[in-house]
Length: 150
Image (cartoon, rainbow, N blue to C red; front, side, top):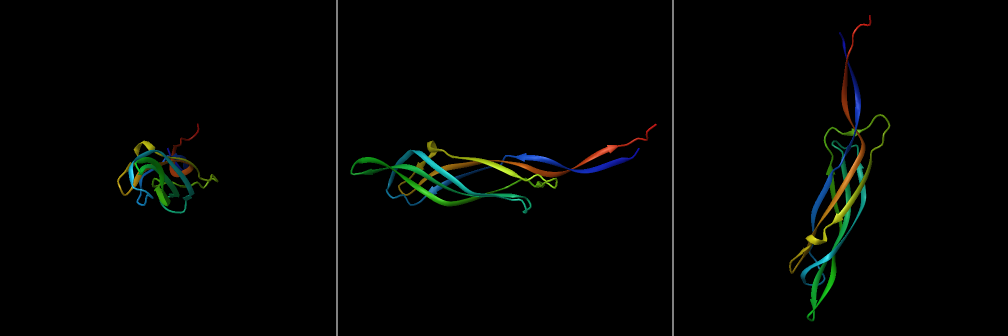
């Protein structure tokens, strides 16, 4: 009985995530407490399929609300951190598919206003991004045992 090996591609989807604590070190006023809002934008998302392993890179801006005192009255302001960047290395062994599939990705992002912290000199908060990257391939072998036909 002969054994035949066929080289094929297994199409995969991965769900990498990114989390960071962003610190704003230049609030306009002296923080006395955390606010209850944060905002975030993500841009320049790109997948470098030529690198090994493949890498997702992106830029983001975020702002966190904080409280400050002005003549005994509590006000709110935002501290912004712009031009941040990040990257995620995808699992080793994934490549662009040879069968004509183009890698695609979608993402979502958020900041957690409930986790904003302050000191008298800074405001910080967590941000997170979740990606779904589809149409990635990894080489796989399919083995077939053959018999002679009667």
